[in-house]
Every structure is written in C-alpha cells, then in structure tokens.
Image (cartoon, rainbow, N blue to C red):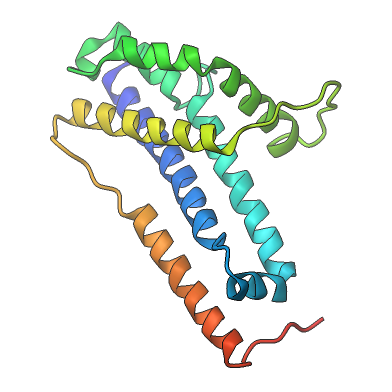
Length: 195
C-alpha cells in the first residue's frame, strides 16, 4: 500500500468509526429512562422503533467495516498491516499493542462480521447455526478503542498533536434538544399519535 492509498483508507476508517460513534451516541441519548421519555417513544412507535433499529444496525455495520480483514477494506487490521510494513505511516504508534488487541478481540470480530454477513448486509444468506450475542458493554469498549486507534493513526500520519471530532457531541446535543421539545409538547398535550 502506498502513502496515497494509506491516507485514503485512514480517512475512510475514521469515517466508519465516527459514523458508528454517532449512531451509538444518538441511541444512548434516545434511551433516557424516565416516564416522559417512554411516553414520547410510545406515542410514535411507527417512527421510533424503526429509527432505533436503523441506528443500531448502522452502528454495527460501520463497526464491522472498521474491523473487516478483507484486504480491500479501509479497516484497522489493514491499516495496522500497512503501518507494520511501512513504519513511516505511523511513527510512534505502538503497532504490536494494536495487533495484540485485535487478536484478543478475534471472537468478538468474528461474531460481528458474521452478524453483518447474515443479518445486516446480506439478508438472503441462510443461517445454519445460532448467531453469537454481542454484549453492549464490550461493544462500547471496542468502539472506544477503535476511536483511540483512529486518532493515534491519524495524528501519527499527519504529524499533528491532536484531532477533534464534534460529530458525536453535536449528534447527542441535537437528539437531546429534539427529545426535550417532544417531552415539552407531550406534557402540554400538544402531541398525539394518529393512525
């Protein structure tokens, strides 16, 4: 992989991780557990049930893309392999540590890729064995490490000290504001479900 291709894949990898983080952030913001919030979600199940499912599936799909070993993908395994072969792509990054982390998460990655291949991207694939469950806590930990790796690889390649990503904060803020507006409308009797 040459420097130009590495740069492009690094950007696409960062986009996958950011999209997964945004989906996760919106979902977590929507899942406030109080009576008013449940009432708002229950008033419009034809929207919120499907919106939550789409966000959940998008989060899983983008994370699977970020961890896919297929040589054509813009994923962490491929970026790490390229950085091992061309250390100038990631000066100062502890590549063996990332490789070790990937090996330790291999069962999780296999389960996620299998879920993607049978339920998220290819619905027509027959499933002969039950799909493994993905624990949400482990998933959020994986997503946090993917973001950390994205930042480290980006900073090393571009030789910058830090990088910021306001997309997750902005998505959470906008979701929270929409939530507050809907709750206020619900409290004042301005919302009703229509069939």
